[in-house]
Length: 491
Image 1: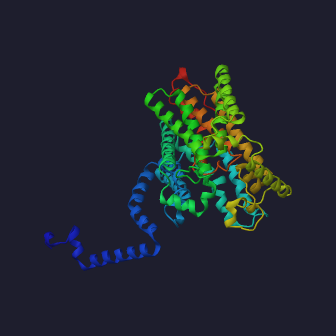
Image 2: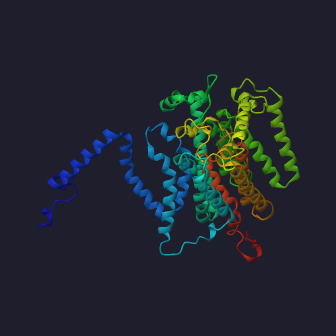
């Protein structure tokens, strides 16, 4: 056969077989889009990008971990723009599982070194995850679907993320990449929030407000900014968290360009905290900086820092300066022990105390608070607002679960503080670990007033930080590798 008589490229479209396949494919795609909506069209458009992403992921598994961090910032806001996108709920699970698969295939011809993951923090995560799994047989739990839905944020992501971080983030460059990714998204979150307060919300956000969110996000005619996160409470706490970490890192940053970047992130983060109108968010910087001053082990810095914190407390508690500003006025109400919102929370905790007195293992994961009403609309726990992360843990996993959870968190903070004060020698590394530790402590304190600890993106950032904090000596091996500068790395 003459090769010049053979149909190639676009000429094949003139052949009946190829033309039939093309027309049939287009008709099928058109039918699916017409029946299922825009989500199918977006999925088809995304297919080649997904294929490319998988190639990159299997070559560099750390891309999956960083994808989880980035996804944490947008995953809860996407449903405002794309209705009925049911896959969004399992997107984080899929990314993390695919990262493990990519790690296995990436090192298919060599034995995966799991030794970096054999740390106390992994052991603690496994204990917490095991306790959460046992909640499946909690006799008080009435819905297995509710248990599965609640398991993710409470224990599953912690169990998946910590070992991945220990294995994949093994040098300073990767540590810096994580921090940079975090700060870039924090900056974007701040800028979106500023657009909401200056220009206004877009039509999708307005629709979300009209569907019921306005009851908690528009107070006295003023918008509580939420950016593209789940809600204003999450936005305020996360921006305060990011701002604290950025501020502390900026203190030791030698590059002027990087220092200015971190300062910008910090300023906009604190501004976002105010715009959110989230009263509990103010506890993040107050408690985080208090721990920071202690970890510095410098009497002058400690004294000046605590004077500053006391000054901020006095400003909000005992003065009326700035009451003309709605954001400051709302923040100030968080320091009032007679605040109606606080009294309601204390009343709810009293009701829960009576109910849980005979239930040491709680009422079951996913069974407490407003979120549980979709599974158990008439149950006692689903009709009592928990408001607090710790109250939620207490209600769902009992006093035993709460004590175990608090032990794990304070162990991580204490161990990290010990490494910072007595083991780490490199000032830059020490400052970054101090920032992560102080930031986590701030979120721990703020979680008493809001369920922010396990919410995206804060939960993902916390779990990655936990692994880095307790693996901080690893980041000094590069600098202190010659005999005269050798550091003892045993943990």
